[in-house]
Image (cartoon, rainbow, N blue to C red; front, side, top):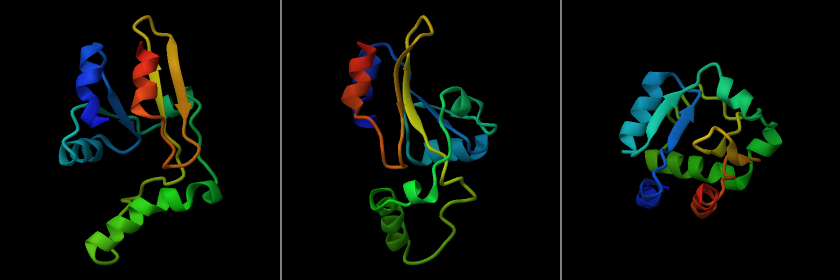
Length: 127
């Protein structure tokens, strides 16, 4: 998504990253990854509930595709270290496009942690 930031800018769209992590942690995460997006904290998960994003079962959460990034991180770090920082691994995320008039123009609730729509789908929803 970062690589296509110019496409979002051209459509005069602001991308927001919303996490249930505390503000300090989400700011650090966005700074470390040099994300060009505004990063917000929703600790009480009010936005998650409003958009119908629930917690998944462990079976749905621990898929090979979802675990692959964590395995790579584990191997890159050279062994066990705290990796999750108390995060809720079962909380599902999603991607949404809200039109300027406040209507929901696109909604995608992830089925597992690795399930995301393509950036092209998001851009198409913007119009």
